[in-house]
Length: 474
Image: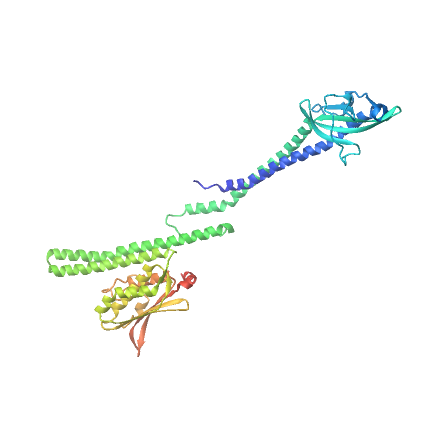
């Protein structure tokens, strides 16, 4: 499913509440306008009722009073607003006896409010007359004269077409203005979104115009603050991709370069054996040695590539470094016995957050390297201590140590101290693993009486309780 447009989200998010408010306001406005019009036109109805009341005559007193009305309908035409409304009237006694007007206009049976809106005994109500809704004003009109006194009920009804038409006109005029406001809001949203997303489009165009393989950081000095987190995150991703691609290129380049030589040697040895230049057994022994060196080289290069792969994974578990050191030492014990080494081990519990394979590969390479360089019958010690949030793994041998000129190159790939006995990748793998775990690897010659008595390889790694420290160092 395609992601929704930012313009659509903003328009819907702004216009829907605005339209809902306009609809609610329109309904309320129509009711208030109709109430205001009723107040205004009710005054006209009251005036009509008073005109009729002023023209009444009476004979008799109170219950015996007979009321007479001589009001022509034409007298009410002056109070008709236009031809869209019509007036009806009825004059009755207090008991509902018709005196004048429309006899089918229902008689009033209500009550005068305790506080009438005008200074008169008047009441207003809605009624239906001749199938139409009408507004009725009721006036209790005292009638007095030379021949008697009494009370008349004057009813004046007006159809509601005009009132509702005016209320609708007020509503329509208001809605037109509000519709114009909604259109202005929509236009402003479109323009603002267009302007606000311009840096995004410019950034997208610059990225699309880049050459293939260009993973240099994005430079966006004029980008708005809200876009900077995206730019920084993109640069971080591109940096990781650049490192990954560089490692892949280096792996392919080194593999092609380093495997070419043993394969060429192997081919030469096979051809020599086929020609009968060497005894079959001797030829097979040379082929076996070449295959072993090529296998070791290939395995170490794959290990170097795997270190970079695991570096990208952030869900490393907590491992016990002490258990791993003991296990690796047990695996390599035949090599220790073959060289008749005086082996000692002192390890303490040290939890480390890392992939177990990385810790095993680190320990295996360092221990194997120490065994290889330790003279037969020499001493080899392994110490693992934990203190102040860090562990220290030290492997000490009694070998010849390293020359100062070689020290700086030992951690570089294929920089072996003895090209006949190694591929030059062991310490490079160790250095990559230690760097990935946020630690440090140091090689120091051990001096006794002014001469080199051996080499100490020390690895320092952050303990699991100092996880944040280790990640920061990485």
